[in-house]
Length: 605
Image 1 (spheres, rainbow, N blue to C red):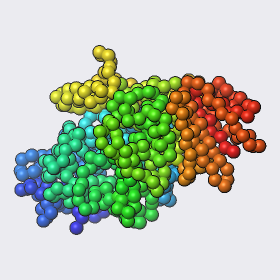
Image 2 (image 1 turned 135 degrees about the horizontal axis):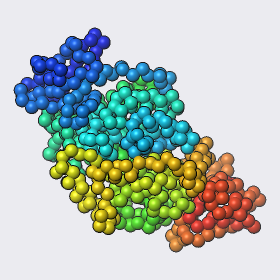
Image 3 (image 1 turned 90 degrees about the vertical axis):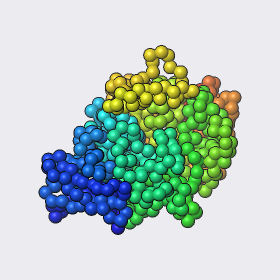
Image 4 (image 1 turned 180 degrees about the vertical axis):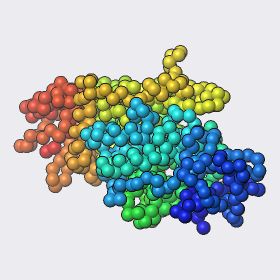
């Protein structure tokens, strides 16, 4: 029997409690408002459970192991007093849902917007995101992706230090606030995805190892011992995370999950955890009649993640593609430190535009080994690309956004490259109006030794990338680091930011209308000029042709055009209506195309 872990209130007034602790000699349930502990019974698989009456919503509890140590529930749904304190009983059906007719959407139809709950709005809560749906609707986004919200220590964190994967962060608004947000998104025709972390736990408040072998020393990750997905007793560990994923989809009505750093989910068993998760999600689709998407973050460039089961794949719907970001970022900025050493050439950008993977079984100088496999035959709709995300901004030493690194014209050029590409686009909050407030790494740990370790670790981790001046390094623990990472919503007072916002709007509209669809067909041709930093992309079928000229250089690019029909401009980033310095008429004169420096021209014929 697949036991449901955590505290589950039943309609008969009782509450079922269940926790896995295979080596414990006894497990007792401790209620904050009662003096007598309640004994739990153990089954043959190491699950301790019991059903108790007179347990009301909001009841606070812990488990006592072996008559001495008391810990919160590793499957707690709420930690109202923080990661070290009591767990709270939360009724599953407390929210009155209004989205019964919602069926979800395919990944191919999504335009994704990644945001951090704490810094997206001044208040930093789930419910205040609802107030910004008008903005996102005007922009043309149809899918929101939340960075991790599992309960973490303190009130400031990216979310990757979560230690209670079943409990939405209390300072964001907890269970109630999150369900209100999801319901409001569906009412406005937005999909909503959640970033989940199944490769490690945060260092503070991490009591799960007190209960059983949730970790294994067989493998090690950047965070320490790996989570136990294939060692002894791993069946219960796998079920813990499968139940968590299905909870977000079924009980919270999320439309999908972004799976953090799956290359650190180490499983050498016959049925990989990711495939099992995909199969269980498919079964849930059959049960609910809704579509769900699973998107992997991976730096392996391994098509097995997204191939169908019958081809030996894991059946995930999509994966992030770092190669696209790195190819574009290096051409835009000229940066070549760290992993950017593998990129920076126009032909690599052309390759990324055509097939997503640059490293497709080729040698990486930075990694000093061959990386990836060939994505031939994989639909471009399986790849999610971006020009900014929380990692690529926040994991810079100073957290600079693209708007601080490149010109206004290059920001438009970058946006057009991403949004005209054949892949699923993802924006990072604020990029649509050129936000310059840095998105920096922040925490609010309670342990002074841990704070010091984080501070020193951040300085060392990226020192090969960027070298800060004395006193410039942002302190992750400082509240001002968090405050300075919040979006500035007064962007419409700035003419340049208004132009950029309007440019994003038209690109997303054209993307939605399928204007760039020809760039996704077989037979797309690319041409590059390294010296002048030119990428030319062209495609045609029986309906016509589409050409994009992306000028990353410092001089005007000109080209003759022939034929009786004058090319029809789809979009020109240098046009005055987007804050440029040229009119559409000046682009096409006397049989010549003109593309200014740091600009893009896309035309049909």
